[in-house]
Amino acid sequence: MIRKSVLMLLAVMLVSAGLLAQQKANVTITEWDTPTKDSHPHDPLAAADGSLWYTGQYANKLGRLDFKTGEIQEWALKTPNSGPHGLIEDKDGNIWFTANSAAYVGKLNPKTSAITEYKMPDPAARDPHTPLFDRKGILWFTVQQGNMIGKIDPATGQVTLKQSPTRDSRPYGLRINSKGVLFYCEFNSNKLASIDPDTFEIKEYTLPDPAARPRRIAIAPDDRVYYSDYARGYLGRLDPKTGKVEEWPSPGGRSSQPYGIAATADGIIWYSESNVQPNTIVVHIKSIREAIQKITPDFACIKSERARGYRWVEVA
Image (cartoon, rainbow, N blue to C red; front, side, top):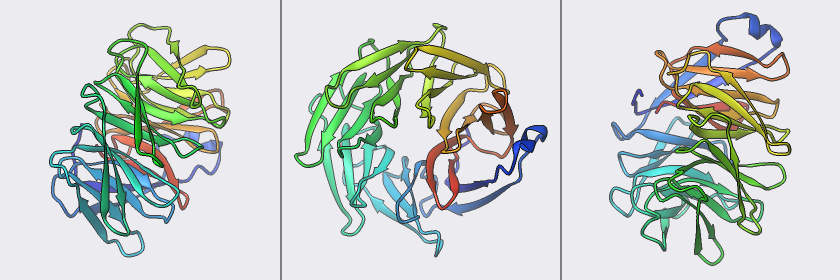
């Protein structure tokens, strides 16, 4: 995939269903160079104050873009080679991140620049990946190579880990539905899974094709779970109520490697084809005969965060 130290902003306007008859959508792209060269900005987060945060994976830093001034501020992490990956904001404005290369989850207080590290109690949990808060303020996260799901109680700092039921399933993307149930995808198996946040019970859903490898997921307003099948070049949808799975070939073909995926409040599903040159964003509009329309700016990964009417896009 293309590697750039550039943050990109995509403002997409879907005015009517007439978009489906077009080959391209009108988009506006604005770019900002990150202060640290080759930092590999990753996992952008739209914060409550309208700013944009990102992890500088190769630079061991977190960054914040102020849209009003265009200024980017960076914070160096305490532990060398932490490999910061996922980001999430808590109700107090603290920025939490997963140290994918250093076996901890961190919290940055932007006001004081203080960083708190929550070490993994099991050495096998070496690569925390995607973080997410539930309704009670508990932080959940996936552990990919360690094959675990974890949670942290910010009030006590207690870290709890649990193995994913399928061996070497590599938990990856993580989302929460309208009822507070968490879902994650098993990137090294053909399964999705749900987590009961009260009991920590994990339920797996097996996808029809053994070759499926869901990498990221998005949950639509109706609580159906969409997944990007990275290995087969498909967009899929699971209805947890019935267990029904539907799939659609991605326009870029079997080698298109669908990756980042987002569901917006209007029920539209956006995802990226990371192995198509130039990279593409694909729009899945379920209300019009399940049509898929491709637009072609040079992107590799789309995040589902939203602020001030924009959808945030990351080049990864």
